[in-house]
Length: 347
Image 1 (spheres, rainbow, N blue to C red):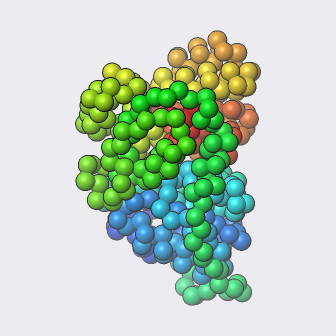
Image 2: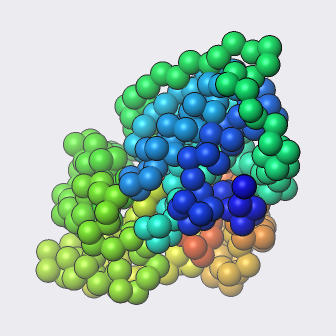
Image 3: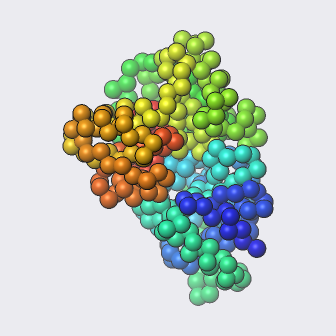
């Protein structure tokens, strides 16, 4: 029985094992292979305790469907986006439930060029195939079984980030980092050696038991630790991420949480200085500040329906240089029109 409740507007997400389980992951790999006929796909996973077994079955579904898999292991969602685009794969899947409770997991799917696969662009087609129970053979008829290879893409990803943001531009600030025991910790620590910044680390070791609570900085109770560390260490700012670090959140030097509403305007202004006259995409929750800032900076403000799939489609449609949401998602033209939780704080 396939739980249709797991098929959301932008991804698959639900309770484990009632709605998301290994059988479903396997079937998604098979269905993706039938629908898109990819030669190779990228698979990554977050730190959740069920993510490894889900990723393993997803990979088996792909290879049984004749698709080769580039397994990049434990990573953030944006690393799957980057690897899919940079390695010219025909698709990618991230196993993650981001900031959801511990008993949840999910799958985020993208196609060629890291274009999102949503309910409007393929998820419901995958569900329709699963409902028909078309996948019973061990190997897809007429196809050679695919191969899976583990590939470390970290250095390529980090070098790409530094091609977009120069450390030479940065001031020697003191920064509190709260990884929330998710996937951000190892990336931030790898960046640290190449940045003129002093870091104070909180919860940077990935731990799927989430000993300090599920990483969701939008919850007020989850902000206290970062805010306190900023004040105690007299830091210039604080940064916290959700589990798969596709969103980052900011604290000022007084330990105050800075709403993403203002970060969108701040980043829009920066990018319009770099590319005057460009389009800026934003969701309906950040209208006033963003519209005023963009207009004053000589850009073209374009409102878009909220949700990462819609934002990415609009970025491509209008060739916008940047887009942002109140939820903390920030989208960049030069990052494959995708969202990143590392680029906002680096900028």
